[in-house]
Length: 155
Image (cartoon, rainbow, N blue to C red):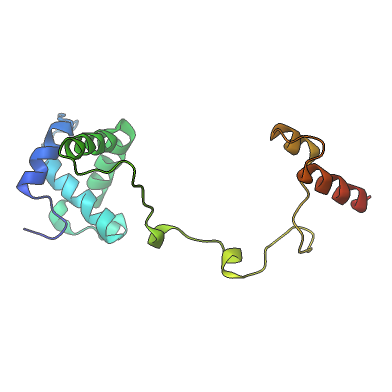
């Protein structure tokens, strides 16, 4: 079995959620499993679509199938079905939620770099009175007092 390819067991779980449609051209439609394997290869490797190995077929075809399935909600239905199956088996702890920190990028300011502010000053832009009011803050709010002080200084 090739790397990043679905096993037969995985394909049996996913196959009912993959739409079956006829080719719109005179050529036979490409195998959906092969297309899904190509999509998984690109997503797993992070490679550009144009670098997709030839064994998956033309990259344009695989990308077109990916785009079609994404917009029609095929991947969402597959994920939902797999979550339901795992939940019934007791493999999902819904109280535990994790974010992979390797994919969350912090701003430069979080790493100690200076913040970019228009006007060249190191202070933050003042909170406008309407924004504080929309946030439900009252007149004695620190935000409103800060905004008033900054507005009066700028005049």
